[in-house]
Image (tube, rainbow, N blue to C red):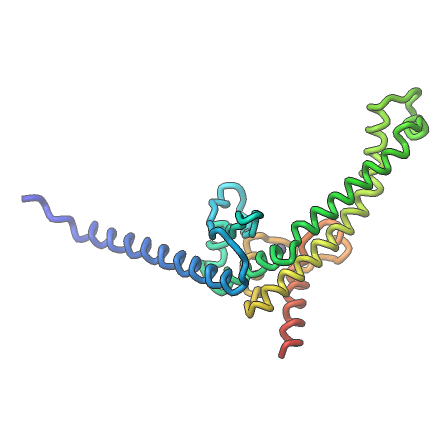
Length: 235
Ligand SMILES: [Zn+2]
């Protein structure tokens, strides 16, 4: 007759199975919560996926991407971990991402980037046949290579910083709008923002000028203040 399985091994096995079952139940609850949220918004989504983002970065993230019927909601495993599979918090983040999608923020950002490229090529057209810019850098003769390089130096040290500031202001506005969309769905994104910031370790309340120059997302304090204002207005 075989030896019976030792009681200690049986106990460990039961604990491991219970842990796995709990994980599966938590992920199922998250999936169901997000599916019902998507139904509520009426967004045509082909599926909800989780990706193994922790292999690339510890930052938590989620996004809605795709077009022409291939739209999908993608959630990083880091987001699930940071927010401890909490359905209301994860739904609030997904509500924010749906807001970006419904309001076509990706297209708006693409339009602004294209405008920047247009200005880049348009301004290059003014100097491509003028030797003055290259000569003013101290070169004795000009060439297409030098003209392009000198132009890039001027453009990327004068126009691009201004454009970055404008672009950051624009993307921040879109972030506030997406937060407002999540709030409009009856979700509270504030606890999720606080939960994510613990891992992302961004400056919670930086100097506004430094932040405008370097951050394309609003600081945590500003986002929470904006949601507080929206909720106070609704009361
Ligand atoms: Zn966003």
